[in-house]
Image 1 (cartoon, rainbow, N blue to C red):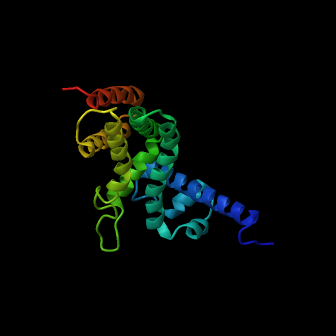
Image 2: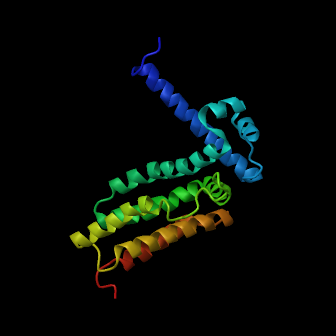
Image 3: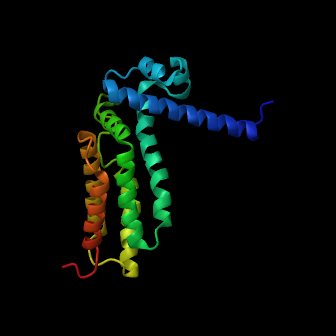
Length: 210
């Protein structure tokens, strides 16, 4: 018997979420193989081992699926990074954990990052303009926690004097640049890059660095 708030409803929600992630993962694989333009719902359904009707049940067409692919990457990134950041002791350790966990996530999800890049470059809104027209559209939500960590570190004396907004943007540009290089260079050592980046920003944020 169907219940509104019982275990059946919770199980149904869990199954639906798992199915959505399965479809998105299939879309990532198809885009990686044939590109955004050739990533039809039929191909994605075939890769997922389901019918197109199942995709239509969970997503309102290809544009919605591609939009959710972008959103899901950020959700998955947050799920990956949050435990490492929360486990770090103090603002300096949290900032370094933010950098390292973000770069490790990129390294572990290169195909996903590449697919997201194709979606961002190609997905159009109803008026024909790019759906993700401006990188600044969602930047504040992404960068705000990092700015807050830097300000908190300055407040408690962990960091020296610098503009936390500028520093956060430089850090984000460094991470975003790593994403592009990870797509282009299959053998690129992101782990070593992360170690060097963390060392550089550790020095850059210290007191008396000048």
